[in-house]
Image (cartoon, rainbow, N blue to C red):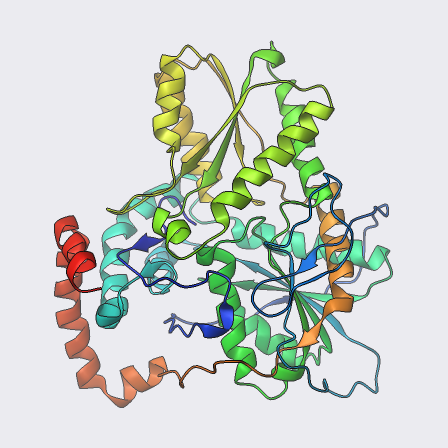
Length: 481
């Protein structure tokens, strides 16, 4: 999530399985759409590397897709999710098989003028602001209010890194690199980019996939660890679209839900850390400081989000790889980007940096472990805000590991993950508990314009009160839920 624009804000929510995707039906309201795909010819080659299997997981079907990973641990909590609730005949493919890979990411404003509508899309997502059922009508007014209030500060942050987010450009480059790596492995695919909150939207990518006549699809979220607010939110969009379309519902699909445990990812992170440590005059004295994006505690403790467990496991695997190479540096993990009146995962990055300075730590290497691309949270929050705080707190030598971006070993491992997932693709054509039909944005805004205006007006007033009144929020949680 965007550290400056804010992140998941939880007022309250009912207990539910974080991974039980088929029982969730959310409405998301967006500004304008624009599609995009990556289908450039192969122009690069990569050496072939071996990967190892993940597993089918999460609520639908659980079976081992291969051996345990290189670290001797089987990962069934997240991996390749194959929708096998009810398998039907897929679309007839008399012609050559057409494979698609859909990369999912957050998205970000490309200009300062995009900031406020991007924020609106972000906060209109019920997986970001989880309102109790009696107050879900406030979703749009609250999103509008928060986006208007936060836009000025967010614009300043984006202006400091060049006037917009580089996330789309970098994700497009990753898509091309992945396509090239797969081509080198004799897998000719179309790679698509779908952003959750800005162009090109996930919905537009899916429409392009349908127009291109894709016959088998691998969905690859660019989030190493699974969270309700990232991968989960994007997958629910896909689920709704595939359920409602006759062609898409019979399209074989495999979803790689998380991949932090893959050997290629772990080794790529260790390579970057090991390289950056050498930039210090005394590498052995440097504290390795992992900074992960935070989520509200209630996501983990009430909704069953596996994010914290996966993050801690991820750090364990990276540090084990480093220790196997003789790197014995101390390390710590903290969580950044909290916002709102609720408790987030601790310890907080800003507080830990101050404490480390007080303890006499002089050399620190920051490692952004939730992110595989440079964006506002690495370029502004870590490189500017946290660096300044660290130096003010007494830390003298500061370094930061770059995001993976298009690192060859990282892209090579993603390609291996895609190839491993392909045989597991199955149609998601039937659902155990089909949700009721959704009311579309056009119905609420255009078919009943007066009702919509009234709801937005009074909802905005109530949303304003709720937003700045933690005591009221606690009262709602205690007495109305």
